[in-house]
Structures are given as structure tokens and as C-alpha cells.
Length: 429
Image (cartoon, rainbow, N blue to C red; front, top):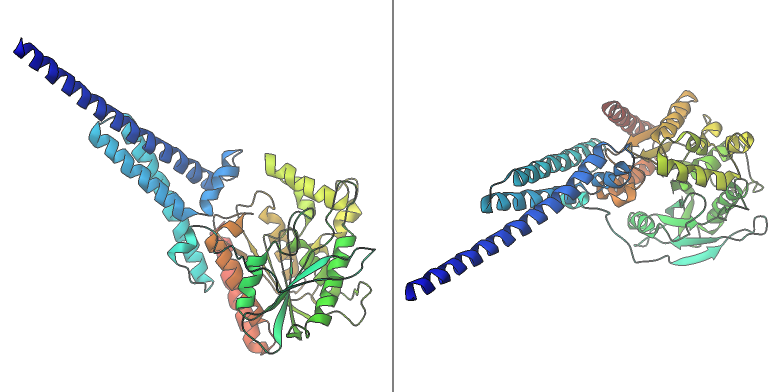
């Protein structure tokens, strides 16, 4: 009887151990499988960003390749642990998926690091884990400007961190598909500029709705904002002789559109009040809203057309003259200020073809322009630490190169960046 009880006890002990090992094995497999699946979505989406569904979501891997590398490495470690507990084909598959995803993350980091280095922008490991910062330091003042057609929009004012005599002035125009956004939406970007000694004015403008297109009103408001910023610059310690304009997405349309029209002699009713714009720098710019009509991507293409049609009041077939009037490309001239365009080649909302067409046309017209791609990023480039750093550093460098302190140095700096941008575009195919 004692022997029987002992054998039964040993069987139960072994069974408990087996159950414990099986549960542990299953837990490790599940962890490895989950990490492998997430890593593969990000890796495949980054490289197949044009694919429906997975390209829209998975392309985030190009913005946070550091996390892709960490996630896939952890998944590979979990897969190896599962293999050691219980060798199986499933564990090997998980390990293989994670290794491939890690390789994808490494490639994205290497490509972005090489590209930033070629632009003279230094990067660190933290730049590959997401956006640089989310500033909580709001504007120093908020004013109104206008009225323009009965509207008096608001404009945020961000003063330089340190006291600067006659600080250079930047007017930054926010994005949001012409239908959303505010004067404080790009506070982090503005604060990066104030840290570099710029005085920043950030106007909002009347947003388009289904019943109220703003394709005529918004450009006039931005022109008024420029004139107002020039008048107010001295009050906030700025120099009316050093004016620059920036913008992103829809703001990247309004910035060159208005500035190019001013360069061609339009005053928008503000004769003698407009500042002389020395340079323009825009990111992911919707320079030609008409390109939305040919956007082939299922979800983002529909969204792009929605924004363009709200802004103009209809389709290009219905209102060709409106689309012609809001295309910044149509107003480029030799007199247009030097313009920098930073973009993500994998942009599913604002396809890069429109940006490259603008750059090509500007060069043909004799205008100074550089189109600079940040590899494996797209319209959410602001979520990318590498992309954010590229935008900030290239913008500041562009403005310093075109500050007017020396024509020879200015031309040399512009030519160097243009050569680098051309080489980058060639390498991206």
C-alpha cells in the first residue's frame, strides 16, 4: 500500500510539473506570436506602404523604427525561450518573423540616419523612437488680425527664449486639410524655432465647411496675417527686415501660394504693408490640391478628395478655375523666394508627385528650390523623431543660408543642399 501511494504521488507530481511547463511554454509562445505579428505588420506596412489596409496602419514602422527593433528583438527572445522549453516549428516561425522584422527596423534606421547625415543633421538613438517633444509651453500672446470679409482670426505669438535684438521673424501656417487646426496646434514646432532665436507668429484662418468653401478667403487672410505680423514685429522684438514663412500640409499650400502671388506683385489690398519674404520652408506640403483627385489609395485618397472639395466647394471638373487659383505651382516665378520642401516619400495623403512637380516647375522658372525626402516617412512625419529633427534643422539652416548676409555664401549653401536633395531623390528612385 505504501508503494502504491508513493507511485501515485510521483505520478501526480510529474503531471503537475508537465502542466506547469506546458503553461509556461504556451505563455511564451503567445508572447512571441503577438510580438511577431505586430512587428510583421509594422515591417510589411513600412515597405509595402501602398498596400490597402496594412500599408495605412503598418507604415507607422517608418516613423518609430526604434520601437520596431525593440519589439521584434523581444519577440525573437521569447521565441528562443519557447524553443528551449519545447522545440517546435511554431517557435521557429515566430523567431524567423521577428528576425526579419528586426532587419527591417535596422534598415529604416540606417537609411534615415544616412540621409540626415548627408543633410548635415546629426541624429541620436532617441530620434528613432518617435516625436522629439510635445511642448506644453503655449504662446506668449494671442492677438487677432483683420477683419477680412468680416472675419477676424486669431494669431499666436511665440517670443524667443532669450532676449534677441531685432529677432528674425517666422510666420507659420498650420495644416489640417483647410478644415481643422488652430493657431496653437503647432506649438512644439514654434518653440523649437524660438529656441533658435526666432520670433514666431502663428495665424489661424477661417476653416472650410461643406457649405462654406474658403479657397478665396483663406489666402487673403494669410496675406493679411503677413502684413499684420510685419506691423507687430517690432512690438515683440522682431526685425521687419528678416521675414520667413513656414507651413505644413494645408499650411504648406497656403504658404507658397500666398508668398508666390506676393512675389508676382499682388498686394491683397495691403499696398506697402507686405514684408519682404527672404525664404520659405514647408513640410509635407499640399502645394497643388488638384493632385488629390488622382490619389489612388482607397481610404486616404477619399480623405484627400474630401479636404480638397471642402476647400474649393467641388471637384476639379466642376470648378477647374478654383483649383487653378489654389495651386501654388501655378504662381511660381523667378521672383519667388527660395523655397525648401521637406516631405515623406511614403505619403498616402499628399502624394510626393505633386511636391516634385512643384520643384521641377520652380527650377524651370528660375526659382531657387530644394525638395528633400526623409526615407520611410509619409504624411505623419511629425510623429517621427528623425523626421521632426530634419524639418527643424533644415528649416533653420535654410533660413540662415538665405538671410542675406552674403550673396556668395548664400548661393553656396543653397547649391550644396540642392545637390544633396537631388542625390537623395535619385537614391529613392
